[in-house]
Image 1: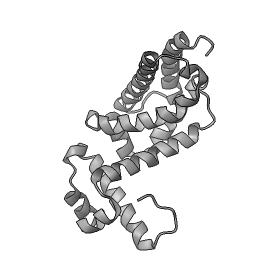
Image 2: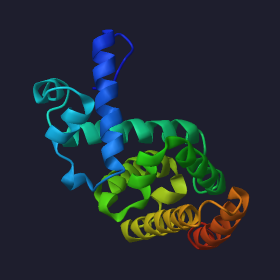
Image 3: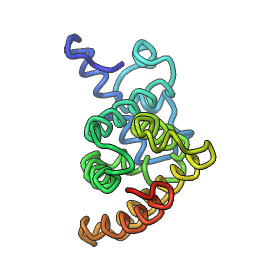
Image 4: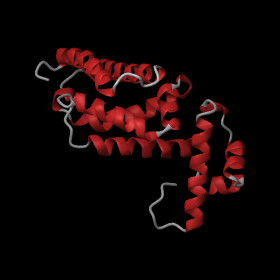
Length: 191
């Protein structure tokens, strides 16, 4: 249940407890091993309360994905792809840093790949669909381009996190952008 700000304080606290508990569990185990009973015990609610707000665990995940994706999409709104790809990469890193451990786990851990791919698909659908040059590509080229961008971005972010975020973010982005923009220019010569 996405909060609108008009809810009763008890509803707000319950939803916050559910999401906080779920975020903690995300950091501890793969999605398929998180059970509603365990989530409810941690949130100190009963299962009936959980089901008053969410039909399934997937509904909770979808809502949290939408919230995470919406925040990122808001930040990249107005940027034009592929022209602003380097700025989109910067925003991705900055946004990811701000989101905390659960987001980082979803972004990096292979056990969360299905969840992560749904978030990426949402972002790609909103960001690349506005690009006229992207729309001129064949279906195969679109798939290959987005796979390349997703793969290189996640690989750079994953390596940076695994290395303890030691390298300055500007250096990581410079490497990522050289690699990506070099490849993207083959698709879009005037980037």
